[in-house]
Image (tube, rainbow, N blue to C red; front, side, top):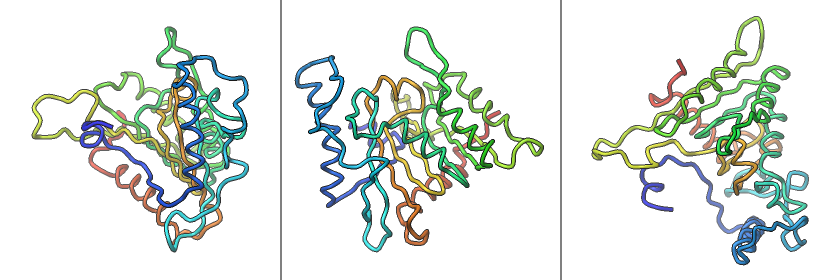
Length: 268
């Protein structure tokens, strides 16, 4: 929430107005954060009291319109890490894997970082949970996958190798599905002579499939799901008519706009 984030970082989010049910459910996540901060307490309860229970989750989503004249979505909020989830809250990573596993036609992903690793521990460890799910989708169900990661000053030199590893599955004699990857480079502002730290980057984290829209706050590496607080929102469109899914269509069009833009390049 500073001037860089609002003017020199590319983001994607969602605003939901006049919906007290979702507001109350999100407040449960905030209340857990507040409890931790208020007590300056690093001891996490083995089980969170029921007052922090989620109102809705992957098994029992909230059914409602997002916009007038739009079909009903099945909606729920997720949280990470798992230690900060009440017993009824769906973990963010579990939701992402479920979305990938349930896709039948396509999966479009836009994230800043994509690493099947723990990045910020003293010794890096391999972490293939999301990577494996993507490979399963294209191998077992012939899903079309497009993954748009970000390239900026802080991108590690080996991230393209992981993306090219996914692309290596492509081939007429191997798959009917496909995995394509690109890197999005944010255009530099011509009026600013010196680079602004931690800016000029495509910072959004979202995914859209033939069934679901997911918008989250976490980069796709292990640390963000295991050691870092984050939230996500899932909007399932399975029960609705495509022509009445204005929000779904907006996200779909935004991804394709970026994918085909001059700022998205194939990985060499």
